Length: 108
Image (cartoon, rainbow, N blue to C red):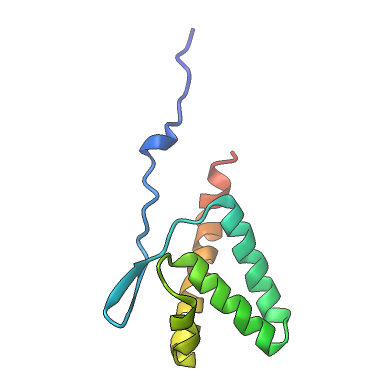
């Protein structure tokens, strides 16, 4: 009888490799859970089709959700180019997960 194939998820490293620095403080992007990933994809889609004030609120929510410890007020007070840079950073990370197959690998 063949030995079973084992996938030990306890040994899988999911630490963040993405960090932003604001005011000299580093904030590590937390790994997305499946629920976080779904919410992030919905948020991206909603923000692209929303009224401007709603779109910005969704963007701020996405940033605060992705970087624990980052205060909503800090995001609301930042300049627009910085807000856009962080949002695109998160968006690119989300798209990388899909492109690299990381999201689908666990279901195969």
